[in-house]
Length: 545
Ligand code: FAD
Image (cartoon, rainbow, N blue to C red):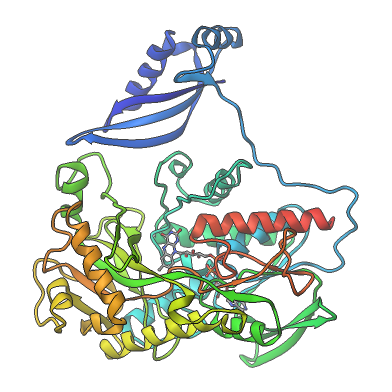
């Protein structure tokens, strides 16, 4: 197979034009191509408004001898090389003793879901437990919350089947290095379960809430068809540990028939903790049970909204490009006190969502549908906070959570239970906005004007203001007085890390596998899913089915 890199074509090109170009570059007739697959597509916007796609494509010819001839002619360097298939392989350990009980996975976010999927597929019959509702029911709960403001603390934007990423933009890019092919395996499994195939090659793959919901449901059905079990409305309440070795967990669940809450002991010597970053009550219990953990840095800030056409103009040179989707951006700056300020989780054509999971506390995030057709672009503008801002050391492992809670309480107060909104002018002048400008909030959940600046300690508020002003130098209009700010973005990543060793087991409890974002080993859907896969591999190395 031949790999062709740096193949440049104008955006809006046809399939036939791509095929002609492939043949031209290889110096063959189009009919000689048996099969081709796009491996990567990125955008070259250096000469905007003239925009180009740059492709890497794998090509198989009718005759292998011809492939060899072409490869020989082009040598080892350059844009035409031999394509090497990096196929992901799940490890099998034939000498391992069988797993004593079915492995239990706590949490059905990307980390838990992928861990369960891989273990189920390879015959381990995992039990996946999730405190929230299955995705169809959860969707209703979330929509009800956005409409009425009445929160269901166990079924919301953070909790429920699919985890935190279900009501999201579904961006799938990650910076995690991937020699083993796990990143592609995550995308492949998503596609196998209903995601659009373009995510396999797009430079910035994204799924969107509308499609993700179906993908999550399909993955659950697959897990069950492979022999796994999924239990919803089922919360792990504590671990059972004897001499540093795990022997089971306590769960509480809703009895489907009676609607009663019940307790049960699940015997298990292998438990994956894929809790996500919002399981504050469970973190507290684990801490009290002596599971080693430490506070870590994360970031807090606001969500900003601009008109999408302004972002398109800046990135593409035109307000609406005929062939390209709503444009994205990524910006960084340094505030005068040295703090890093950066944009995060940017949602082109998206919505700001009320992403709260605790009563009396409010946090926001962003989501979009697959078409990214909303009027506004939104993104978090966040500032790094370190344990020095809120307390360090093993005794203070939960101090980051307390810091988040204080900010979320202030946000709840600022908006009187609704998402607090302030235009950038008001944010700079420390006054509550009274009227909107050109940009109108595109929000899921009710909003009202409030003092967003007042949510933050002074140094963080100042850093956000400086950052936004700096970003205006890169995207004209970013710091316009009309720019909408809402808050608080407090759950950008986990405020703690549950310590694990090279076998991925907790450094204090044998058999316990802290995994994914909540345990501090991932940030985002894809990296959490990849950590879930790695954890499944570690279990498979230790035990056979
Ligand atoms: P989670 O997804 O948080 O899943 C943890 C699960 O564990 C939850 O379902 C929870 O209910 C369950 N759980 C917790 N405690 C217990 C317990 N005691 N018993 C049983 N179950 C429990 N990332 C991206 O890469 N791209 C995006 O576009 C993107 N957009 C986002 C938009 C929103 C609105 C939000 C909230 C997040 C977004 N993220 C995005 C972040 C992404 O969702 C997370 O990084 C990712 O979901 C983390 O995966 P996880 O499996 O580690 O944890």
